[in-house]
Image (cartoon, rainbow, N blue to C red; front, top):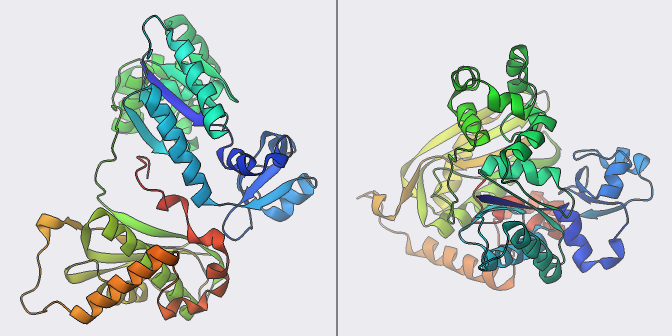
Length: 404
């Protein structure tokens, strides 16, 4: 049996842990630039506010709501506490996302029912972390995740009986399956596959034909055949990237370069943490008109040095850049990682002791006094970003999660 634990309205719940006066009030958590709601309480959801609703529309729908900036540093603190609490009761545990965990479900004590064990973990996390969570237990990961969603909020469901399993699957549309979106559902509809039970009862060959191997593996999981094991540790990264929204519309190439440098510095943090170097650097841009472009620069040797990666980023950005167009999103990508045994260094470029010393000082200062206290002067064109502490930490900086 596999368990799935999901925190209820995690970002909102996390804010309520340190601000108890927010309980039972409509609360919305805003993204980096405060332009849209990225999480909302059940009270705010009842007023019609959805994830992604612009703040100006959310205020009209829910004028009595309380809107706060997200704080991923604090969210990680509570996420790690949840991971520790789950690990005390079950093993192994997979740190799937900042607020989701999979675990091998077993009764920790002799004679204890599995459902009672799930309730005990749910109650323990509320007491130890102040967070309401919901737990689902079933034969596979896909089933456990589906069933935990049916028990929200602050619920627990254990499905060991096949009839109970079929009953729940019959209630759920196929779009509730993680990995089956609107386009895939449209492919299934002509064959009468509209619910999760329809999906499970369809022929496997048809599912593979319509949705390829990924859809077939979901079909296996829905029929009680585990495909993906519990992963206590994340598999090594094949690619590392940093980026996201540019917090508005950016046309000025100088500001665009400043964002590129910021993301390169964040990317280097990850290269150092994972002890890898990259053979290339890529920059992808999303433009306001819907177009997207990308540029890649091959490096002479695998590198994790700021000066060398900055040269690569400059070339990659030039190749992705479209003059007089407005950009909205950017990602800087290290697509070809090399681990310690695979570093091939040049015979003609001796180590630069001065630059290495500068990099060490920069790292030491930032570790002691705070992230980005020392940074490239190119990023001075982003004063609002660095003045707002909400931008010092992002969800992708939470390391160890399996999903990304």
